Length: 252
Figure 1 (cartoon, one colour):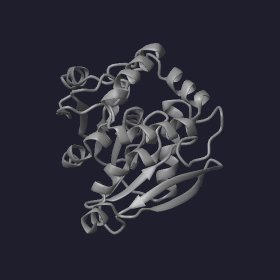
Figure 2 (cartoon, rainbow, N blue to C red; figure 1 turned 90 degrees about the vertical axis):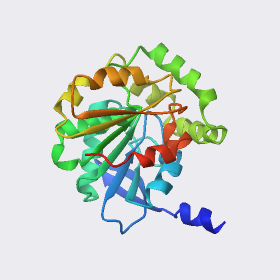
Figure 3 (cartoon, rainbow, N blue to C red; figure 1 turned 45 degrees about the horizontal axis):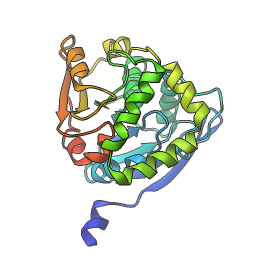
Figure 4 (cartoon, one colour; figure 1 turned 60 degrees about the vertical axis):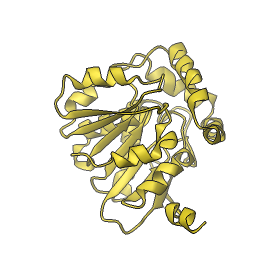
């Protein structure tokens, strides 16, 4: 039990107002000189990344951020429903919390967001880690997005399912649909081309949503991009293989 307590530090909820929205984050490991910020995927919530945060907090001050309308953050029905809007909100949140050049760990759609953040707001970003980032080379049609997610469900850890379900219920069908529709056929390649620093792309060998082969194909065009495959990891590798993700967090 003592080891479990040591490995899973208690976080602190921190709220601030960004564009009139009460925005939630949870911070772990205060006092470490280097800060890491975890940016969730489409419809995801901060509580889906607790395993990753607990491990990262042994080395970093870790912020688990909830985008508008997701997790415990307030949202408006027609706001923060595109990558550009999510990026702008994240940029303002970083400035409000006075977080300077953190290690950015974006998962799935959050990977697209941190790549765009680095291109549009390079002064706010530090090392970039995109875990199973969508949009590379481009997002598929909405029906194919849904099909790939359904294929991934049986590959995830059983204890992860209720965390996902509660997050998706909180996000709601309408916001989920708006976000999924907004990224349909969207490519993150233009964002990646503007990134001025090294990028680490993590892919899971058992991920049907974002294939490692697609990430490797993209990396051939830019020498500052490194792709690492996590063996037997599904799309939710930040939970299923949090240890593997943490072992690869040091990037250029």
